[in-house]
Length: 120
Image (cartoon, rainbow, N blue to C red; front, side, top):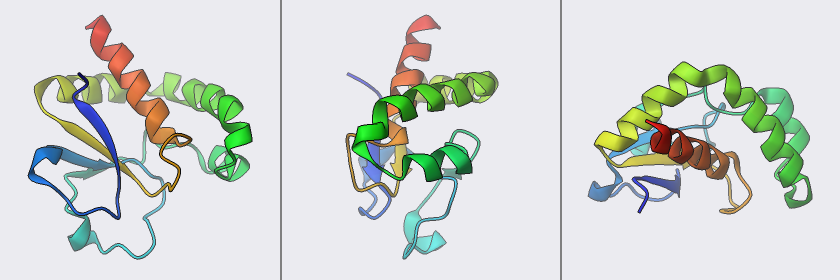
């Protein structure tokens, strides 16, 4: 079982969330910083503005988006190693604003982190 979960930032925090990390580049609309109960806002591992705009949450573009996003993440090895190590110590909840639970960057990020955890 993975120690990394994904939740929408709009859902209320739970004690089982562990480390709550927002992984969106932009702050989500309608959420105050106090209500988010974040441990960290990590923009470094979010997709670039250009990639995010191109994708526009279109499920038909998801496979190409995933490929491009993985390429971007390849430049963040140190940060990915930090997050993978964190997830080995405690529950890591990746928070994002995306409505589509299957076609968003957090799904890809979790997969990358889980694969990295298996290597360490």
